[in-house]
Amino acid sequence: MSFDEIADKALRTKDGSSTCEDFVSLVQKWLNKIKWSNSFRGIFSETNQSELAAFTSYALAFPDNFLALVDTYDVIRSGIPNFCAVALALSDLGYKAVGIRLDSGDLAYLSCETRKLFCSIEKEYELSYFGKMSITASNDLNEETLDALNKQGHEVDAYGIGTYLVTCYAQAALGVVFKLVEINNQPRIKLSEDVSKVSIPCKKRIYRLYGKETYPLVDIITGENEPPPKVGERILCRHPFQESKRAYVVPQHVEELLRCYCAGSSDKKQETLPPLKDIRDRCIKQLEQMRRDHMRRLNPTPYKVSVSAKLYDFIHFLWLNEAPVGELQ
Image (tube, rainbow, N blue to C red; front, side, top):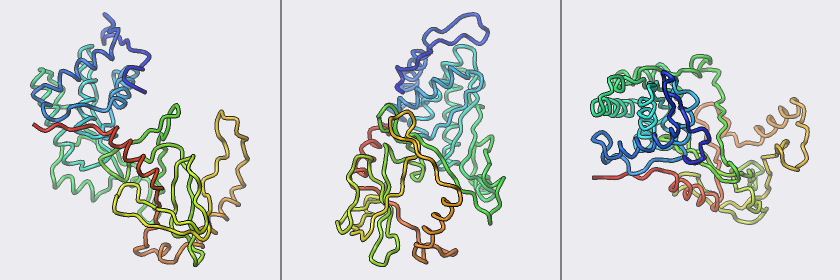
């Protein structure tokens, strides 16, 4: 979704006395204004427009409860400027934004920098509440994290604690997150202050490559339309984000891992999922095939998951196109 594609652009004032017929234009006006303000001068030259569209849509739907996740692309150079533009537009109509949430990166540093910007906006535009807006932090927080934040100094007002509140350390939780990889046939990528949270865009296929000793060597992710790896043919396997980590593999056996059982509204035939027992048995069999050092409880060797050279190039092309560009003065 682009910034210009938001369908409902109108928003009534808080007291209902009038209607802003084009809230999108009001947001854009504020973004252009704060770009050259004393508060943000030199911090950003452009922000991610998809993020701005998402914030604007959220504000149109929930003007009284606008709390935005600001680390999808870049907190300081995109997330906070976009949030402030929408919050200031809401303020013009009598609404007060709630605040922001940080879910990756250096929480102490980012919260302090965000508070400085909020206070600067409050002073520059004489908005008495702006500097006190809520800053919420999340991202697998535990007692050690909270202690470290308190010792460093921070500006966090609230914490989102889930995993470590409802699970015990010995029975770890499996974190599963659904992330959009394509919309209207256009590949999408989620960026983050934390590289491990950057998503791999577009529809994909996944293969497990086996070596001479019959155990798996590496899993490789390819684009949907790439040719599959072939037995006996050398293939370049690349780390998705670290340029120097790469290796050639000559597989002795290739197994495709991803299988689609329901393709939505497409013409592809829908299949029935296997019984839960069969799924469990297959999982146990896969684990039994792993090398012992991958399965040991103490300091296990990480199992490698790679991408094809073509997918690697596309990830970084899209990354550079979506990431905001800073400006130094």
